[in-house]
Structures are given as C-alpha cells and as structure tokens.
Image (cartoon, rainbow, N blue to C red; front, side, top):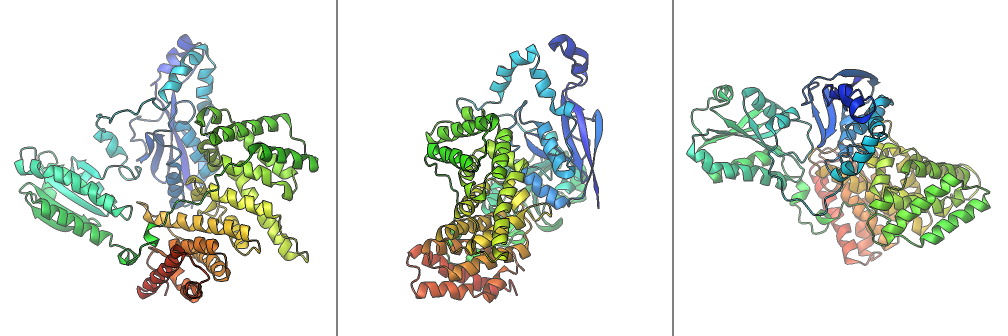
Amino acid sequence: MASPVKLYVYDLSQGMARQMSMGLIGKQIDGIWHTSVVVYGHEFYYGQGIFASAPGTTLHGRPVEIVDMGETYLPEDVFIEYIDSLRSVYTPEKYHLLENNCNNFTNDVCQFLTGRTIPSHITALPADFLQTPFGQSLRPMIESFFSPPAHPAGPSTTAFAPAAAASVPSLAPATTSPLHTATNLSALTHHLTTNRAVVVFFTSATCGPCRMIEPEFERVIPDKNDQLAGRGRVVGVKVDTQVAFDAASQYGIRATPTFKFFLDGKEFHEFKGADTHELRSGVDLLAWTAYPPHPHTILSLRHIPSLSTDPILFSAIGNLDAVFAKLDTVAKEDEVEIGVEDREALDKAKAVLIRRKEGKPASDSAFELNVDKFDATVARLLAALSLAHHFPLLDILRLLLLESRVADFYARNPSTLVEIIQRVNSATDASASSTATDLPPKTLVLMTLRVACNVLCYPAIPTTHLLSSSPASHRGDLTALLISSLLSPDTQIRQTAASLAFDVAAWIARGRSESSPRAEDDEWELEVASAAAGALEAEKEEEIVYRLACAMAHLLYCVPKGSAVPGLMSVLGVKEAMEKKVVEQSVKGDKVKAVCREVGIVLAKSLEMGEGN
C-alpha cells in the first residue's frame, strides 16, 4: 500500500527575512527555511540529531507550506532501518548550517522514499546567501561556529527542556536518557504503551523519604540499561502526585514513595517505602523477565563472547606514486585518455591519501576533494578500462572509502560501488557458462573484495544498500561475490573472501546487540552460513579456517530463538568438520582450536534449546 510523503516547510525568521533581507544583504530572501518529512504518521527532522514527532507538533509551530512529494511503497520497517543508518551521518556534531543541515537531511530522505528532491530554492538558500557581500563577510564566523573547538569543552550545565523531550518520545536516538518525568496521566500512559519495561516512581515534593531514595532511582535505571547492553531497555518515570493528580488517582496512590513496575503495559510488581535493596531487586526482576538472557551467554566460553565485531579492513597505504603511475600505464595500454577534470580529481585524491599516510589531519586536504567529481572519474575510467586494468583505480577507491566524507557520499550514491561488484559477478558467470577456463582477473576480484570489506565499516552503506533486506538493496550482488570468491582456487582470494564473510557475520552479530535489534532474514543468513560452512570444510589454510570459524561463531552466537541457522549447520556437519580439523591437527594454533571447539558447544546448545528444529 502506498504511503503519502509530505515536506513540511517552516520559516525560522517568522517572516522577517522577506521583510528585511533586501535592505540587509541586498538580495531578496523569502524565508530562512527549515524542512521536515512527514510519512507513516510521523514528522522526521534533523537538528541535534534525528528526531520524530507527531506531525505539526514540533517547536517550529505550523508549517508555512506543505509540499506533496508523492508516495512511497517502501515498508515502514525498511524506512526506520534507513533512518537508523543515517544517525551516524546526521549527528549533532556533524550539523553544519551551510553544508549539512536539516534540508540536506530531508532531501536525502525524500530521494530514498520517492526518488524526488526537495524544491531547489530551499537547498540553494545557503549558496544564495554566501553569494552576497554580507554572506561572504560572515562565512568565516559561521565556519568557526561549526568547527571543532581547539580545546574540549567542559560538561554542559544546560538542562534539556522537558517540552522538547516530550515532543520526540518514541523515536529519539538510542542515546536518549532512560529517565523521564510524567506531569499527567496521558504522558504516563504514553511511556507505558511505548516501552516494554517501565518503573514508575510516585513521589511528592514534600516527601522526605522520596528525596532520600530519588538518587538511587536515578542510578539504578541507567545502571540496568548499561548491563542490558542493547538487549532491551528499562525506562524510569517520575510522577509527582501533587502535579499529576489524574495519574495518582488512576493508580490509587495513597502514600509516597510508591514504586510500580510494568511489563508490556501491565502492572508487574509494587512496593512502598524508601528501600533501596527492594528497588534494585525489583528492577533486576523486571529486566530479567522482560529480557531473559540468551542461553548462549551462560555457557562457559572464553573466546567467542570476546570476538571483535569490528570489520576486517584493508587500510594499509602502499607506494602511492607506484599506484597512480600504474593507473596511467594501464590507461595508455587501453588507449583511454585521462582528461583534465579526471586528472584534477585523481590528484586531489592522492593528496588526501598522502596526508593520511604522513599522519597529518585529513580535514584540510579532504575538504578540497570534490567526491562527486571523483566518483564521476571512477565511473568513467572503469567503464573504459579493460577488467584486468581496474585494479589501480579500485586500490585508490578502497583507501578513500575510509574517509568519512567519501563514505558519506557513497551512502547516498552507491551506484558506482554496486556496478563494481556486478562487473565481477558478470565476469564470473560468463566464465562459468562458457567452455573457456579463464576466470576473472585475480587483481580485479581481489581489489573488489577489499573495496567491499572497507565499505562495510560504514554502517549506512550496508544497512541501506548492500546488506538490507529491502527489495531495492543489492544484497544479492554482494552475496554472489562472497560465495564465488570463497570457492576460488586462489588462496589469496579465498583469504580475502573469508575476511568479507567475517565482516558480514559481524554485521549480523552487531545487529543482535543493538538497543533495537534488526529483523533477521533466515533465508539469507542460511545462504551465508552454507557458503561459509562449505568453504571451511574444504579449507586447509589455517588463517582462512580461523576467519571462517569466527564468521560461523558470529552467525551462531546469540542467534534468535526459532532461527533455522543452527539446524542447517547441524545438517552440514559443521561441528564434526571443526572437530576433525582439531583432531587431525590440520589447524595448530591454540586460538583457532579454541574457537572451533566453542562453535561446536554453541551449536549443541542451540540444538538442545530447539533452535533450528
């Protein structure tokens, strides 16, 4: 079913820009535009992070214009997953009045939902302002506002406005405090209906015992959330009975302090008085009941729980002069001309990498690189060069992908990355379907795998484009690259493919530990697990075995109840294959042996609990 998408436009100047801009800056500006996107019954906007509220209830008042941006057919859960991926792009620290503001956010969101951009007079406003003499004179001051401070600032003492907090209760970032205040029954009901586990502290300004236990309440709730480490969330709500009369009446509060514990909106436990031990016990019981620990977490394991979920990256910078010279050489061999604009883009890319290699701050050089032009250069040259000659350009790209500005760009414009992966897949398919024994060039496959690994270090790209379950994503292309490369006769390709398998499995594992775990796709995870299991059984190289074993560990550890992955691994004989490698001493390192043994333990526990049956 289609969902309408609306752009809400606000004038932050409240009409003053229209009246005074000509006299002040010599140019007519009709408004200082702030925009938000309304879809699925919520208004999404960017300021001190990404927020959502009921449409028309933000601090900006009523919109001066509502623009119809069309309709979207994307499911709401896919969109929320996309919004979550943008939280690393649109952070409070990255807000910039001229370069990364609310209108850049809404433009990205509208393009994702409908393929349409927001009106150009809104996105062009900063450039229009800077073209004026007044704007040019103010630019250094504006830049200084949004540059990192020379010395870290001390902790802020400014209180977070309750009204602002109330406007974005359910879709605020995961860093939002778990402590809230409800001033009426409606606010309390909202917290009870939007959170699974809630502790309500009924207090009173004139209550001495309340003041005694309040600091403990404010400690125990955050402490419990730290212990849960993303498995769930316990929310604490303070209700002053002398203010929220309706809430006190509804729940029959006759004395303070009274603590009520709610699970899924229903009262779970209650006690009265300032007993800190009973408070902690009640919170522990509520958290245990709402979010019981996974059976795997109580196993005696030394290695798997401490395995890193950070992706394996290919960040080493070699001889840059040789890489760029090789690009010139292969271009001449293929009779491909590197034009003036392409040369300029490549030179600036080289400057960024030289600066990083020398350990200098990348910011000055990075801001000189026009990523849009660099991407156009990459796309042009890859289309013109033979497949065997792609590797110098891919080597440059895999290094630049570790620059946040470059990754930001490809999070919004992934087409070049997708085409790189698809070229290898097409070449692999062609070699498999013909009588020729020629495989795709080793350098092409190797560099493409390294690009893919480095891409996965930046959450927005895999979440929205390469590992998302959305029909619009290109997960199938990445999976095909992974499977074919794991089967390669070349050891170096298999080792890099094992790194990619680890990165994919680590991404799945990270999703299980987030405060709002991603929905898992059994069918796809089975495909990845099957490929990794098949490769592991046949593999003789110890380092490759280790990376694949770690990938299997991430796929299995804390797997959701009902997942088919453990059952498949049992059918494929993963436990037996790993035991065989240890017994026959085809792997000799203690760490490799330990992970292989622990994968067998975790798999046995999963089958015992009925997972995968």
